[in-house]
Image 1 (tube, rainbow, N blue to C red):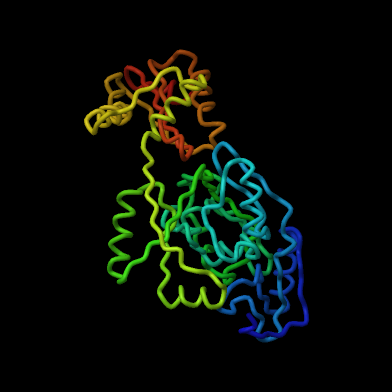
Image 2 (tube, rainbow, N blue to C red):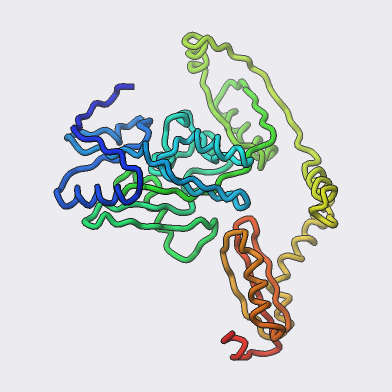
Length: 354
């Protein structure tokens, strides 16, 4: 938009983390200022050099790209264009949870560095809600490379220091790799344009929309009258005011029918009311409590990639080789968090040592 102008006599385009480490180390030792630059789609001039700083462009940082299609965790370099990322994971039935108007040119690392929200924030949150880990390079004498967080949605093993870099806008270091959760791409999308005569009514509609559409609402945008007038005059777009009502009835029935008829499930039951739903949840909630009646219980809580979710309980059974009364596992398959409980009649140091 030509709002900002800067000066620089040097633009560097590294292609791997080690090159960035060497550059930042060199600049630190010689007291050379550096401006990290992503897709240059920001509107506040944060990527513009003001005093002949060295520009560190991330546009060639596009070597690594890996999607775990089971867990929905993406690991990729920070130089990929957001729209390219979205198109690539669409082949596996996923989409990037954050959607921006600049998706065709903004880079993933810049989206993280600015903690972008976008139009889907109401459903999926900002980058803080979706990034599980980062690889970053610090601007110090060593050009230190840090891997913070992990590819796990639930990981309580550290202080979640990667959160400091989300929204830091390059002040703390350069983001080189991103670990983030992506979300299932909707099988259908419904849109509506609604006309109201006051902002208070907009707020009331939003509240009702959250209540009635609940988990399927992903965007709720506001356009005032002057904006509508402008797009008609400048873009030739008329206002096609209409409403659209969609009932997502029988979604669970269809889901159960599909997994039963395909042979993925042997049986299933659908709660018909709140009382039956409570009874189903009571089964799950009793797991950590009911096992106490066995005697002594060793309790373990692990966050694992989904492909190892049930391998660990099996390994524990093999290790104990019948020495325990019971070995059970339950937990949150959605985030890879498994609870392994081992029960014995009374405490036994030999079992503990195993």
